[in-house]
Amino acid sequence: MNAKILLRWLAIAGLGGYGLYILVVSLSRLDLPDLKSAWFWFFILPFVLIYCGSFIATAYFILRRQYQNLCTLISSIVAMIVFFFLMSLPHRFGLEKQFYDWSKDSSSRVLFVAVPVSFAALIIPFYATGWVYRRVQAFLSKFVSENKKSERAAKPD
Image (cartoon, rainbow, N blue to C red; front, side, top):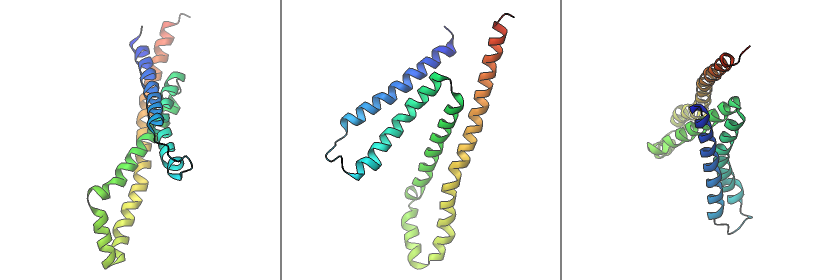
């Protein structure tokens, strides 16, 4: 058995199994006191489904050899990670309190500092997504072209 095929099937089984495991565990351990609660329907359930769905979708795209869709999915996941990281920076550096104190003194200070930071937090994830997308595309195109060359060499005319 080829090492690439073995790694492909290990990735499919590992990612799909992990996604299903987390889905079953999180839904079984979820305390459901009130299913009519907006907190459950708008925050908890979508987060669980998106998190588990990203692993299951990755396994599905690898299984179906839809590497273009896999590249888009990975780029989106990286963009979300970068976005959440950037959103956590003001809290990590204690800038929230400083912005609040500055806003008491003068609102123009907040305008000149908070607006560019907020704009950067909205724009940088899109650039990160584009960068990851291009890198993964280049890697996948090289990988696919190598496979096609080896298949052409193996087929007798």
